[in-house]
Amino acid sequence: MSQSLPSSLHVEPRPHGFGAQVTGLDLSRPMSPELREAVLAAWAKHGVLSFPDQPLSLNALEAFTLQIGAFGDDPYIEPMPGHPNVLELRREADEKATNFGAGWHSDWSFMVRPPAATILRSEVIPPVGGDTLFADATRAYDDLSEAMKAMIAPLRALHSASRSYGTEGVFARDTEARTMKIKVSEEANKIWTHPLVRTHPVTGRKALFINPVYTVGIEGFSDDESKAILGHLFAEMLKEKYIYRHTWSVGTLLMWDNRCTMHFAQGGYDGHLRLMHRTTVAGEVPA
Ligand code: SIN
Image 1 (tube, helix red, strand yellow):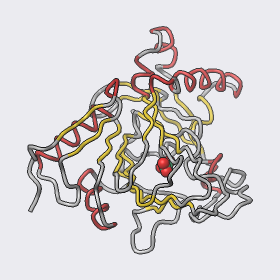
Image 2 (cartoon, rainbow, N blue to C red; image 1 turned 135 degrees about the horizontal axis):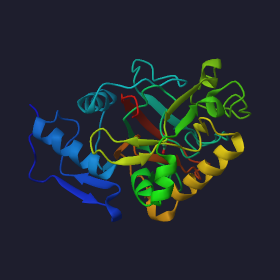
Image 3 (cartoon, rainbow, N blue to C red; image 1 turned 90 degrees about the horizontal axis):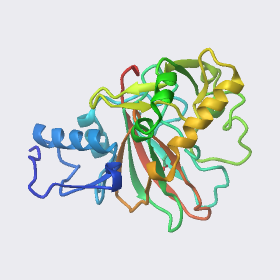
């Protein structure tokens, strides 16, 4: 039976309303339409939702994801056996390779339709490090000068997976063994363009849709010009006042909106296992 809107449902926003913790519901049970609406509304408002104490099997994680939307495609990483839409983000205690996600990015922004949501649930967390940081690309946009907003309004940014998954990318140059099975490919060297400023399809708010890992330039601008403009915008987005640092507990499920945030997996837990399960929800063509 589906879970109706529980009276215990509580949404606790973080400062500035960027990120919120949601308690008083059980994500292993199907959500009623009212509860789903309440979760989606909180997600639209806060961009990143954390749901502590959610002991979910992989099947339950998949079922929850499908209540948010259809699965997204996850290129370049081998999924879990028997679970083609679940990635295991696993780094062993003795692993020396850089941790996955160790650069500011918005998931798969190089795709024609980048995922709207990423859902990440913690199975094993290290006693030190391993935080995930989020940057609020909506407020960073809002606070730009009107002159800067007018200048960037018509621009299209170039996105590519090349620096990570391309034949000359970070993973192709790995010298240390890695548990996660990464697929380096020629395909990753392709470039796709998206509006540099994106309008959120639900809230109608504008956000900077760029990130240091996958945004490789701006259409029509030279490399130096692109670097100067993007460098300035990244510095704005990464100001402390736009950052939410998530420190994990075991069994927390985090759901973030790739259309208006970027994130960074901090690392700093050498000598300890970290194990997470991740799904994505399909998104739309950015506009
Ligand atoms: C990611 O970029 O999806 C990984 C985030 C994390 O492991 O904290």
